[in-house]
Image 1 (cartoon, rainbow, N blue to C red):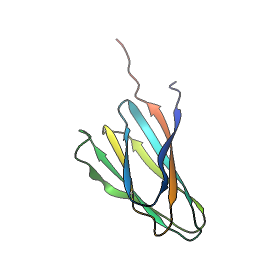
Image 2: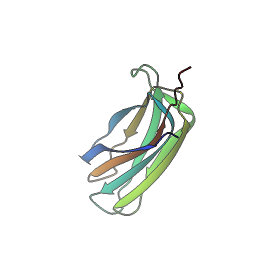
Image 3: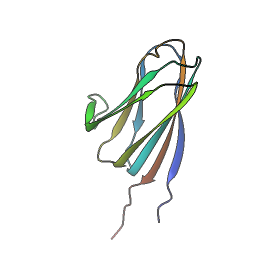
Image 4: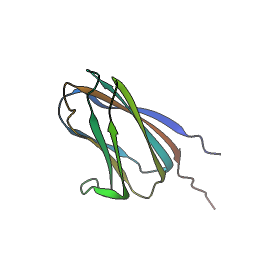
Amino acid sequence: MEIPSITTIALATAASGSGVYVIDMRGTNIASLQINSTFSNAGDTDVITLKISNDNVSFLAFATNKTATLTGGTTDHALFELGVIDYAFLQVSYAAPSAHTVTLSGVLYATPTITREA
C-alpha cells in the first residue's frame, strides 16, 4: 500500500493582480487539488484555471477545462479531481480579484506512482 501525501501550498498572498504557480507532478499517480481562498472583502470574486505541461514551458488546457470561479463570502473553496496523472507539471493560474486582494492556498492530495522491481 502506498501512503498518500497531503501537501499545503501557498499560491498567492494578498494578491491584487493575476499570477501563476507551477506544481511538479512527476512521481504522482492519482491526485486532487483543493483551492482555499480568503478575500480581503466579502463579495469579491476570482477565477482559477488549471493547465498541464510536460516541459514546464508550454502549458495547455485539459481536454475538459478545469476552471472555478470563487465568489461570495470572504472564504471560498474549490476542489479539482485530477484523476490519473499523465503529465509532468500542473499550472494553477489566478486572475486578478474583482477588487481588493485575495490569498490562495492549495492542498494537494496525491498518491505516488508505484514502482515494482523484478
